[in-house]
Image 1 (cartoon, one colour):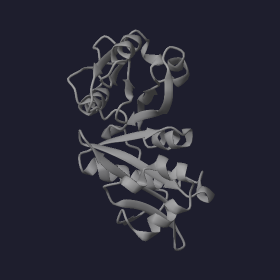
Image 2: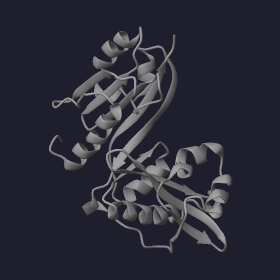
Image 3: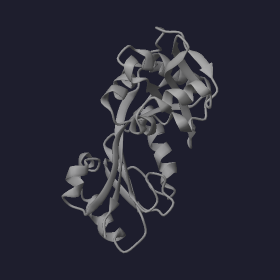
Length: 239
C-alpha cells in the first residue's frame, strides 16, 4: 500500500493540514503530534485522519495533551475513527464524523453522460433556491455554499434539482460538494452533476476528494471511480 501513488498524494494533503512536522508511519500505526494550528479539526479538538494502514492524530496543547497522545498512540488504526470505541477509553464530549475519504485518479474516472448539465456562478439564485429547499443538515453536509468553482447543475423545467461544485483545498485538492433536491434523488442526477464538477477539477490539475458520511453520497463517488482510502474524525475531550 505504501507504493500506491493516490494514497501517497492523499496523505500529503493531510500532512500539510496538520500544520506541524509529522508523518504517517511507514510500517502502519499511528503518528501523534501536538498542533495548535491543525486543520484536521476545529480549534482545540483532537483531529484524526486514517488513510490506508496508518493514521495521523493532532492534539491541542494543554494539560490533557500528554494523556490523549499516549492513549491514541496505543490504539489500532481501525479504532481511531470509531467514536464508540474511542468513547470507551477517553472522556469524549463531542464528535464530528466520521467522514469517509475517497480520491480519484484521473485514469479511473468513469464520467456520467446521462443528463444535460449547465454551468452557473456559485452564487446563482437558482442554486440558492435549491439549498433553501433542503434541511439545514443536508445543506451543511453538501458544502455547496462554500464552493470556489462554478456550479454544475441539472434542471427540470425552470428549476435546478441537482448541483455540484468543489472547494479548492491546500495541496491542490478539489473537495467535491453535491446536492440533489429530495424529490429527485435516486435518479442519477447527482452523478451527472458531480461528473461535470469532477471533470473540471481534473482539467485544472486538482486532486478530487470526496469527503462524506451518508452512504448514498459514497455510492455516487464509487460510481464515478473514486476509491475510498480512509476516514476522518474529530473529537472534543471533556474536562
